Length: 271
Image 1: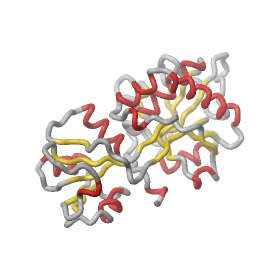
Image 2: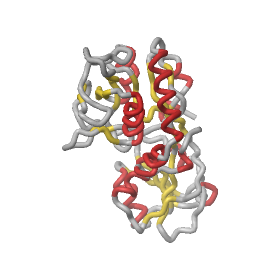
Image 3: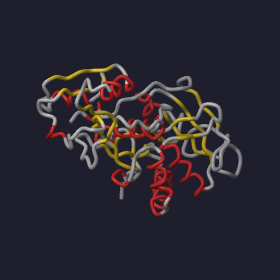
Image 4: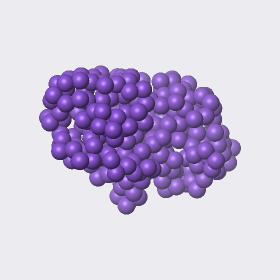
């Protein structure tokens, strides 16, 4: 499995390389990165790096609130620690470099924990798991990947899921330039099944339910990924603090509430 291609990234909603101070419960303005700076005050400020993509970690247009699966988890951890949060936004591919350049203290953006990335940064304990989903028309009887041989399959161009559908023995593979076009093809029964990012499709259906679509469930992803926050190798104290805050979050109902809010569920919980 090519871990470099595991997750499709979407365009940032604010300019790249921009630090944004958030005024939230447990969040606010403060200093830049560098081991969890205090910003000159008594309350600690942590700068997180994100590519600002829904539904993972993004600032909501209008309110400026930090949202998303990872965004709300770091907010909960910050609340428990009494931290303020500052957000540094850049392209996903540059986040590790930005972290090691001390432009941020932690990467909080649905980053898969991989051996390759561990050579450059340390990861927290797993936050949650995430992989692909199988989407079919609402009246379809297809129930697993094993059922799609000889069927017309679809995926989004530029994603790892194209490689998956190519391997499943379908009669035809159709590619689409956008998630919207992909789902429209399912609605119109131009395809029998499509494969896409589980968090993205889950969030889309939470925001806009579609009775013509069905997520195959239960479903075991072919490309499962374990998500964690990334910190610099020398920032052992922040790593410890994030892990202790995460452990407390996982003991509370809020952990599952955050996952469900963005279209995930118990199957995505990490011990």
